[in-house]
Image 1 (tube, helix red, strand yellow):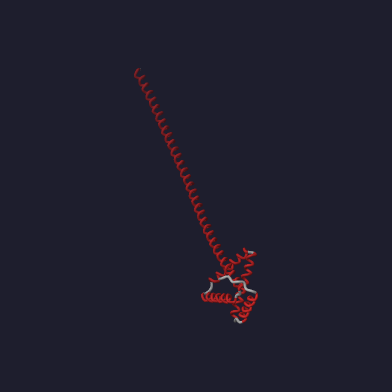
Image 2: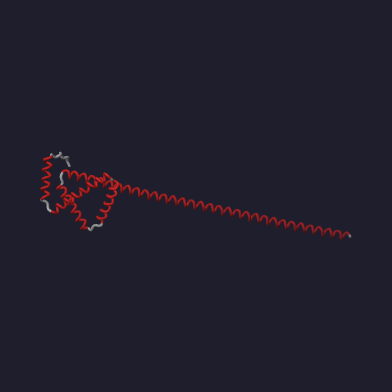
Length: 215
């Protein structure tokens, strides 16, 4: 839209007079639509003032209202949605036709603000989605690390148990071998003692026989 020159006082008065005359000839429905548009602009102006004074509170309220509006639109029946869209289009058309230069500039400013807030809200939603996805990814990664650490600890613990079992088995086998060796040594010692006893007995008998024969 090309930039318009600033109107003189007489031109502004004439434009306002025509606007008042046009409003005086409008029917009740058009008047109601225009008044609703004026109330909407006044509401937007109040919200903009509140937004400048307390942006955080206004942002929270705006998010809540936007969410509620989305839920209401999603719950609409097809005929209700079509009726609302026609009413909104007619309200905007009448508002644009009856607006003054100041109102036109205010509407354009409001549109820019709304578009900026919408882009900001979309960017915030995308950031929240990215942060949530990153948090979930980190949570999964930490869970995998914890599971891997637990599996590694269990494997090490089982390895220690197997090593202890192997050590106990070797010690037991060695004890049994030593016991068998001692058993064999004791048997050999008993056999050796018995053989020596038998030899001494045999030697004693032979000597006794020799003395008997000499007589």
